[in-house]
Every structure is written in C-alpha cells, then in structure tokens.
Length: 151
Image (cartoon, rainbow, N blue to C red; front, top):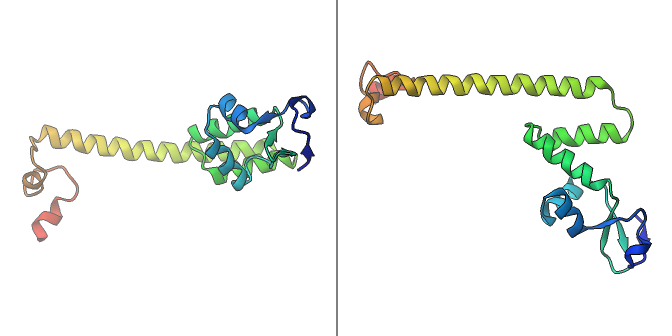
C-alpha cells in the first residue's frame, strides 16, 4: 500500500475513492470493507489524509465478485478463484471444475425443490386443509404422517 497526495490529479491511473467505487460497482461501503477484510479486494493505496484510493480495475473486481455470488458461489469459493487468478496459476480446469460442481449442487437443490413442490401439490389434491388434520389421515401425502400416529 502506498501513500499518495490528496489531490485527485495525483492518484495513479485516476484511482477511485471508496464512495466512487461503491457507486460504480453498485455496492455499499460496508461491502467494500468486508471484501477487503476477506482478502477478495486488495488493500487500496491511501491518500495523505487517509482516504482509500482504489485502482480503476477494482470496479471490475467487485462486479465479478457480485456476479459470482449471484451464480451461487460462496465468498470462500470466490476467494479461491480470485486468488488463483492473481497468482496467474489459473488453469481452465479450475473454473470448469468449480462450475461443474456448482451445477451439480444446483441440480440437486432443484430436485429437492421439485420433490417438495410435488408433495405440496399432492397435499392440496388430497384435500388437506389443515396440517394437523392431514397428518392424522392415512391418505396424507406429507412424509411425516407416521410421526402423527406415534404421538
């Protein structure tokens, strides 16, 4: 981390202050600080007055992090991907393997949600109006019906 003059013209490469970066990347300041603490965003240079000055490419970094989160990657997973790229040790297999694993995870969750949806539809089709009443009926499609008979 370097200390640079407070005048914007002295900022290397037209750096961005925290608020400018947050606005450009559509996140709040706390998100930037959190990403810094997690090591997802490199510690920025500081002005003599202590203001953070981020390089212009930090906007892309933050946007990539947010996009990866929307795709279902955790911050730990994103950190590993970002750090691999920074070390220039990245291989196509890194992202491909992680994306394939994420797809498998998502497909599993989808299968679980479809099963839940189908069970709820069956409960509606069976005329279940009250959970307690339905659970006591042998025709109830909800999987925990056996529990109601044990009580």
